[in-house]
Length: 288
Image 1 (cartoon, rainbow, N blue to C red):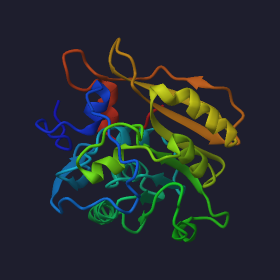
Image 2 (tube, rainbow, N blue to C red):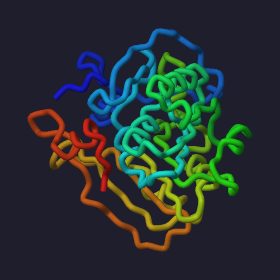
Image 3 (cartoon, rainbow, N blue to C red):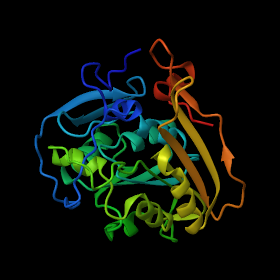
């Protein structure tokens, strides 16, 4: 089953992550605002079975399915707010606000050109009044974010992030925007979690899409940041395959026990999305 958001002849970065084919990248010296704009050409596609009009750059980092799945795992309710770090061109926020039209949000994006594109995507989908995009990165959150928080406490009901995955000491990719999107900063995932934890209200949630290999450390940092009620959902590429990517959700000041969900099988053995994953990727259903 083919989705126009992910052209068949141009595999998304998600597909490479799932198969383990993506080459490691290394922008250790690349600063948040310094990614060179390699092209201003964009490709228009769609998400959620054409419910969402979506533009992304032809060259550089390409959106995969992780933001869509991550957004489906956020337990948002009408009238609530969400913060996304590393929002890219806005796929996660667009999918979340499509499923929950009354939600407001803010996205942080380190690459200035991508932040502008995300703003345009919000406007193209009539979300510009509900979702704002800021040029900024973790941990140096711009001061303007404080003025965009919805409540007097200056925090959000939910936060989400699909942090860069590749270690900084690996060989770099030639495209600066792709390096910035895919290589973790010096502080790693720990710094993303610690920073975002300060922007979530008590009882609110933080949802992450992470490599399975770092889950033990991520859980430890979440607990150190006063999060509990951890819930883990593995993403199985196919039945019987090991999960390389997982979704992890935690509650600020939560006291519940750790929960391991059955997980989601993404593809049939013969190819194509399973019924369960299709319901999320095309029909805008929420994950359990």
